[in-house]
Image (tube, rainbow, N blue to C red; front, top):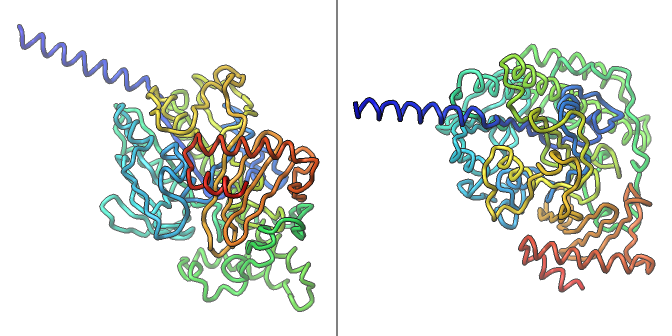
Length: 508
C-alpha cells in the first residue's frame, strides 16, 4: 500500500510538472544580420514590402525606438545573450582573435534551469562554440549564402545544398517537428545570415525589382563638413567592389564557383544581361556611384524578400501545429544599416541608421494587437524580457530591463529609460570607423570620438534628423551639451564602463 501511495505521488508530481511546463510560453527569436529599419514596411519602408515581419507587428507590438549598444555583429549577439554591455561580457568587436567565454551566464542557461529546451540554429558569429543550448547547428563565421557549410555539435562540418535562408528555416522547422521534447517548453533562436554583405539573392528573387529605380537618399553625396570621423571612414557605396559586392566580372569569385550548375544558370541569366548594359567609360564618377547604389539596393532588398518569406514559413508552422497562442515570437536584427544615407553601406557609427534596430514581438496572451511602443529600449533589454516572459527571475547583474511593463500597461513606467549609452570599439579595421562612445536622449545626441585624434559631435535630432551639422562648439548648445556630458558620466558609472569614464574625465 505504501509503495502504491508513493507511485501515485510520483505520478502526480510528474503530471503536475508537465502541466507546469506546458503553461510556460514557448519562445522563438528570429535574429537577422544587418537589417535596416528602412527595409521593413511596418517601419514605413519606401523600398520593399515585408508582410510577414509586418504580421508579427500587427498581431503584437512594434517598438519604434530600439537601439543597439555597439553597432557590429558579434558584440550585439553577445549583448542579446548576456543582457550586459560588451565591456562586461568581453565581446568588444568582430576580430577573430576575440574569444569570449560562452560558458558565462546567458539567458538560455537560466531557461534550461527552469525546464526549457533550448536551441540555436543558423548564424552564430561568436568566436567560441555555443553553450547552454540543448541543440545547436551553426554557420562557421559569417557563413555563405549558397550551399553553406554548417558546424554540428560534435564539431563536424557538413555542406548543405540550397540557399542559406531556406536551409536555416528548414533546419529550425525540422528541430521543432522532430528534434525537441514535446513535454518541455522550448526556446529557439533562428539566426539568419541575410541580409549581410555580399548580398547574394536567391535566384527566384533576382527579378523581383525589375524596372524599379530605388529613391536616392537626400544626403547620398554628403561631403561630411564638420564631421572628421565621417571624412575618415571607408564605407562608401562608391567604393564597393565590382566583383564580390556588385556581381560584375564574377568568373573568379569564390561564392560563384561554389554554386550548382542550375544556380549559376539562374544567376548568369539575370546578372549577365544587366551587366551588358554597363559601360563605365561613358559614365561620370557620380553616375558610377548612382549605378552602384541601384545594384546594391537591388541585391539587399532581394535578400530581404527571402528573409521575410521564410519568417512567414515559421509563422505558418506555428499556426498549423496549434502553437501560435502560447509562443512568443520576436523578430530583430543585430543592428541597423545604411542604405545610402551619407553615401554609405555598413553600420558601426552612432548615427541613426546604424544605431536603430527593428524589434517586433507577438504573444497573444499578453500583447494586444497593433500595440505601438515609442519608449526607448536597447538590445540590452532582450535577455531580461525573454526571462520575465518565461516566468524566470531576472538576475540582478543583467544590465537591461524587461520591456514587459511597456506592453502590459500601455504606458511608460515612472522610472523607465530616458537616455541610452553607446560604445563602439573596433579600430583599426577595413572601414576606418574611429572608436567612440555617446549618449542619446529622445531629442539630442552627444558623441565622443577618440584615438590618435579626439573630438566631440552634437546633434539636435528635431532640427537636424539627418545629422548633417555638428553643433558642438556653437555656444547656443553649451547648456544642453553640459547636461548631456553629466548624463553620459552617469550612464558610464551605472554600467561600470570604467575605461570610458577615464577617457571622458580626460576629455573634459
